Length: 499
Image 1 (tube, rainbow, N blue to C red):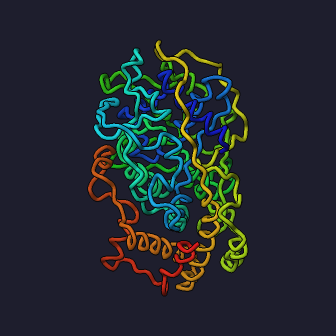
Image 2 (cartoon, one colour):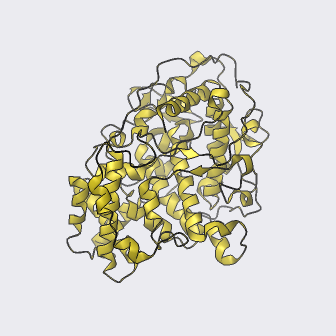
Image 3 (cartoon, helix red, strand yellow):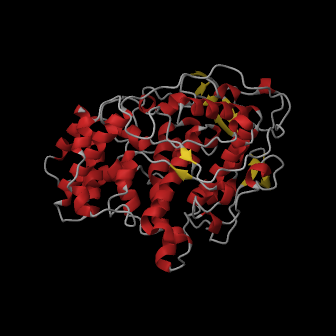
């Protein structure tokens, strides 16, 4: 994502806030029946896809300058590799998207967002200076002018985001039900909980980071479909294919949608929770939702959405991961050719200043729209009077010279560690599970494996028995349910740390 693209995206976020549209999405997200369908059923992944595209439609509607804006996804797997490789030392220094969109320097302030009150750090840097905590506020001077966000410059990067763990999440899922739960109770919950504050609550979309985090979830969902069934899943109706596309599931007996169900996305406020309005008919939201499919059956592919179709750029490590048959059966090379080629020659040539991947500026990776959307009508009416044009300086956008270099080293680490672990029983499944255990154990040895916070569990109705992936594996290692069987396993991390 270029500097110009980043600048335009941040401007669009601010303008969406000023016109009152941004907050409508946080209000919709926190409506009870909508959030239940999104986070307590197997509708999660497709619900998320529709919500993201509607928000992107909103940004594109703000004028000709923003007509081609796309939501950048946040590659926190690459950022985690930087943290493990000792190239950065905090959540914010490893993920420059955090500094690029607002940062975490703020002021103490109490802000109530659709019934949820936050009393911690409130970030005032542009674009957050344009934030208004309610879509019903008419007078701009009454808006908070800041977004609650935890202080992230001293917080360690969260655990459980290694590439072997991602491989297990993709490869161990034998149908959409498994994958939905792997994602929801894995990286989705871990990132939200670790960010804290607004992002750990049901009004998380008030913080624009929500959309980049959930764009990553959407990208992983599409990877999963492509890897398990390739291009056939759009036309193949056999049970063996369809179980990867849609399965029903729910938490605690919630009603689960099926393929013919409409996606439940209703707007309401905490002040009048019973007065729900479907997004498609809401006076201000309908322009962003009306051209999107309404049924779950229409959301199986990002390339079959007409003018809303899109695809994702993927960095070297994500592409490399798809070569393994366990992770990606439909696209894998021969196992032996992968496991005997560790890319050491490529890594030896890499330098911190080399542009190995698709871009050099680190601000998350940019989704590429395969079929350009027709821009919506320019300058739709604002939600309320009193919002002016964007003002205030743009933040300086950080450059990350280590990102591509550490990715080259990480590919070598993953390939060599998998080669050693495969010797246990000859299977890639065991190899990935072993290296995931190694990732969590290494993290816990030098930092401390984090668990879900109470505020996050309370916000999403989760019990005390719900944990991060690495917390679960740490417990299994401690009680003997799991064991690392690779000799001298910690030595495999040395190439990352010394790189």
